[in-house]
Image 1 (cartoon, rainbow, N blue to C red):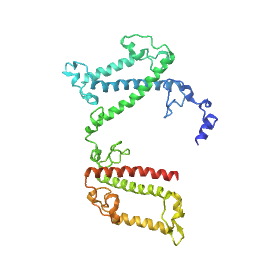
Image 2 (image 1 turned 45 degrees about the horizontal axis):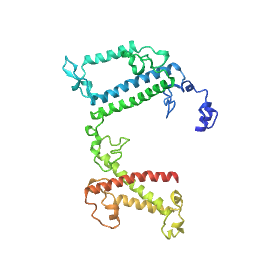
Image 3 (image 1 turned 90 degrees about the horizontal axis):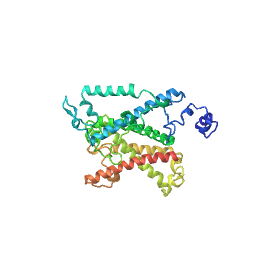
Length: 369
C-alpha cells in the first residue's frame, strides 16, 4: 500500500520527493521552520490546500504563540532566583516579594493590574506590531530580539544564511517553549509547584498505591492507561493479581521456549500414539503434535490448580497463595519464606519486573516464530 501511494504521487515506487511536482506543499518546502529532523512537518495537513494566505496567517500565529510562550517560560523560572524590588501595588500594599510563583500569582494581582496588562498587550497588538515588513509573517520591523520597540536601533542581520538560521532557531525555541509552558501549567495545577514536586500532589488517587510492590526505578508508579485513577483498592488488587499470574505464566513459557533447544525429556510424549518428546518441534509448531487428550490433560491440570490450589490469598496480598518461595510448597518442599521484610520486598519487586519482561519476551517469541 505504501509503495502504491508513493508510486502514485511520485511516479517511483521508492517515493522520490523531487518527482512529486504537483504537491501543494512544494510552495512551502523552502520556508523558515523546515528543518531537521522532521523537515516540513504538518501532521494535520493544514497546508495541503496550498493557499499562501492561510499558510502565512498560521505561521504568524505560530510565531506569536511561540514568543509569548518563551516569555512565559522565562517568567516561571526567573522569580525563583530574582524579583523586582518594591511594590507591585503601593495602593493595595502588595510587594513583588509577596507574590507567589506560577499559577498562584493570579490570585494576588489586583483587577486594575490585569486591566493594565491586557490593555498594554492590546495596544502593542493593534498599534505597534500591526504591519508586517516585506509581507514576512511575524516581522514587524522590531529588529533582533525586538529591541527597536524599546529604542535600541540596529540594522538587523545582513547575511541571509545567518538570518535564516536565527529565524529557524526562533521557531524551534518557540515550539519547545509552547510544550514547556503547558507542562509547567499542568505540574503547577496538580502539585502547587511549577517544578511538579510529587510530594505536594496530595489529592491524587494514585497516592494510595505509590508504596505498593512494583513501584520501582526507572518509571516509579507507571500506569500510562490510567487504570488506577479511580483509587479503588479492590480494582487495583485484582489487576495486580492478574499481572502476577500473567507474568508467572510468561516466565514459564519463555523458559519453555528456550529449554527444548538444549534438552528434552527422554521417552514418549504419548506411547499410544507413538510420539516421542524428541520428535516434538519447538515453538508454535508443537501445537500440531500434541494430541487432543494431551491438551485436555494440560487444560484440566491448569484448571484444578487455579480452582482448588491457588484459590485463596494469604493476608489479602495479591498473588500470594501460600506457595512459598518459588512456589516450592506446592510440590512438597516446605520452607518458612523470607523473614526480612526488605529482602522480601526486593524479591517481590524482582518477580514483578521479571514477569513484565517475560510478557514482552514471549510475545516477541510468538511473533518471530
